[in-house]
Image 1: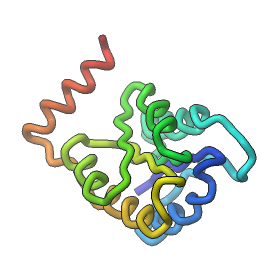
Image 2: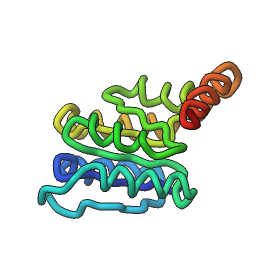
Image 3: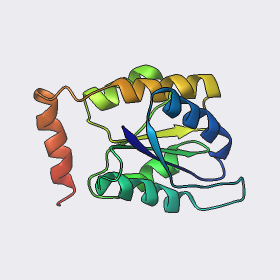
Amino acid sequence: MRVALGCDHGGFQLKPTVLEALADAGCDVVDCGTYSADSVDYPDYAALVAQKVVSQEAELGIVICGTGIGISIAANKIKGIRAALCSDTYSARMSREHNNANVLALGARVIGPGLAYDIVKAFLSGSFAGGRHAVRVDKITALEEE
């Protein structure tokens, strides 16, 4: 599986843990930056990751900022992206199974590295259940056309 990963300066400290989880899961990583703790703008990195997912250069994306809120909002502005901000493993798994989330957002100042590792693994292990959930995801997609 190929995963696009991006973060701002607030998420930079958590990036090595996410890279470790992705490597342990056997994923290929498209590293969209940032590459230091120097201040940058999270919408830029959300857009880079989202575009990789929409263009199918990556199957999934992961974005990280301080809280995960801003970067998830920005990612969700890209047509075709369903970014889920998760702070626990159950939500990460359910975001894939029920919402067909294609981007995981994490808050580096909200969760620690151990939990982040587990959340990434849960997100990667989930798969879309379809059925009644497909109807709901189709309705989310239709909202992008309004």
